[in-house]
Image 1 (cartoon, rainbow, N blue to C red):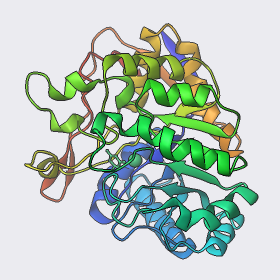
Image 2 (cartoon, helix red, strand yellow; image 1 turned 180 degrees about the vertical axis):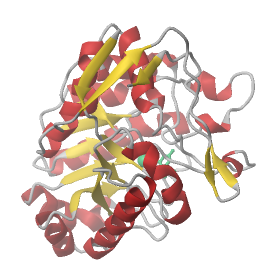
Image 3 (cartoon, protein in one colour; image 1 turned 180 degrees about the horizontal axis):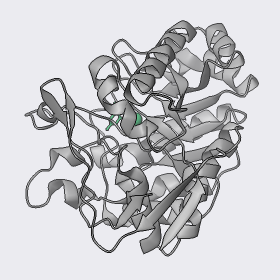
Length: 347
Ligand code: DOR
Ligand code: ZN
């Protein structure tokens, strides 16, 4: 069995910088035509000029790793309490950026500069709504008294819904939704709201993370939830509804920083995302929807044409191995182990 789809794009990717970027960029560029690159470097990418500089470094790293590759990084800006609305509007108008990313301060890796109070960024959000610039949100509240498994649902209720009432014209992507609450909220709303779904949240639940020993390589944010939530995510991804599309959230960390007494959040799934998705969509009896999810819905949301190149995936007779660890200096980055056999390969 095999299927051919338009070449996919990744609408949520962490490429990092320097040696880490040089080590991981080929894993994305081999399969994806474009990727929306997250700005949570240290320091974060907060200005149009910083985004242009970062894009230049990515393009160099791509050509060094995969000479001749047509992989195109699409950039985001990191919203802070002091972001300049004019700079955002200019960077969107001249094609430097495609979206702005909202991290609530303290929500995840390198989010210390994130937004502390939405009121502080209302002028920027108003300018974005007026100029049709997409806001990508890390949808979790960060209050210490909110349980980590409830943070996404609480964000929808206390932050996202009020924001969307206040600025109905703003187009918002709920990044990496992990709950039934998240996909239901998108389903119940209009065309100004969409969601990305990650590879790993379609495959693992919190038992994979915590039963029989703690598995730090499954630790990411938002954290994996109960199985019923994973099933709701699979249903949304395979539904064909154009408001759901692929954002891998591939987020490399070194093995030692994951296997630590305070391990980093992030799953590195860039290399095996497409074969994993073929497995998930086949199991759901929805292989014919994979192209919409991975290759069509994202460009449509961002007003871009789908890719003209294609990708063929083939089902083999024996399970394929998890990709090899990637070397970074004298360290390793461990690829996502989907915790089940994967029979698909990219031809
Ligand atoms: O697990 C995660 N890792 N979630 C995020 O939101 C950020 C990411 C990272 O940058 O490592
Ligand atoms: Zn992310």
